[in-house]
Image (tube, rainbow, N blue to C red; front, side):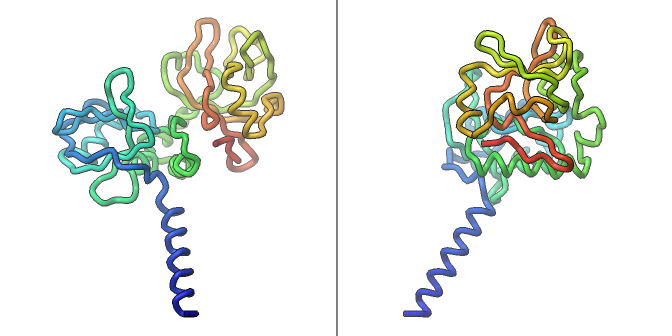
Length: 252
């Protein structure tokens, strides 16, 4: 009986370790063979389905890398949500053959992609962010460019998905919007905007937006704005607190 209990305990420990080692193992959404690389963010399978690589945004060289990784390869799709986007694409994490590591994780580790922060699962989101952080520290791919991470002077970045670092000089509320201002000129300087609808996400994580004043943060998202550049934050994973060395991370 004792030996049996030891075997059961060992099995549970192994299962727990495996679960920790293989995040992003969502329900399978089917299999297929990659027939074409549509662009830097999507592929087409031989059955006609168009698949968007969930959880990441592409860099300039990602289409070429996708071609070398996925052309004519058999893949498995995994996702927590199989709803198509407005273009009819199914968002999914893509796995080659029997691999436990997603193509997204590979691209991030090579510095060929940027985390988009759209993945809601805590463990999967953390794993993807870790892959990006390692590539960033090692200056792999996209991160070899010293301008890959922007400061607050990013007027040329409007209309692009970007990663911006800087110090929040003030936190101000105007109507239903909270502004994390990186510059002293509120109408022209870069700001992070957080709508009242998104506040519960931060409140549930115990984060008061006013506490970010005078803190260095890293934020990612699409840069918008006509008077001054803005990134609209809807997801907790779009914002990271920066410490003396590595970010502690404001993530779900």
